[in-house]
Image (cartoon, rainbow, N blue to C red; front, side, top):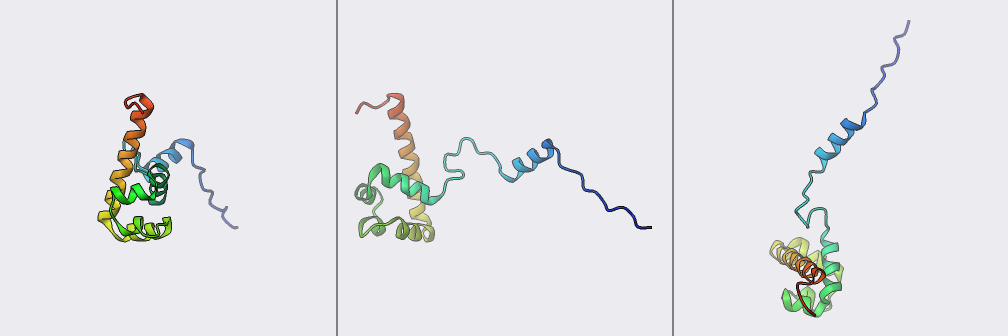
Length: 106
């Protein structure tokens, strides 16, 4: 006689939710959470343009023949430059919120 094959219980929705929340800790107050460096850089270029970006963060990859690809390569290897980009991105978000709420007059 052969024994019946073991059956695996199906996960219920509660256990699935707890696994998902444990795998992805929530950071509702962190605007950088889950955002890629490429998305940040693209948003900054769209908002400021390469020329103003090079003035605000004086690095050569923004000033001389700028491209997203070359800038990402540099920023991934250079922590201090990445921190400056993240800081400018947060500043940009604050400016956008102020304009939307009517805090600044254009």
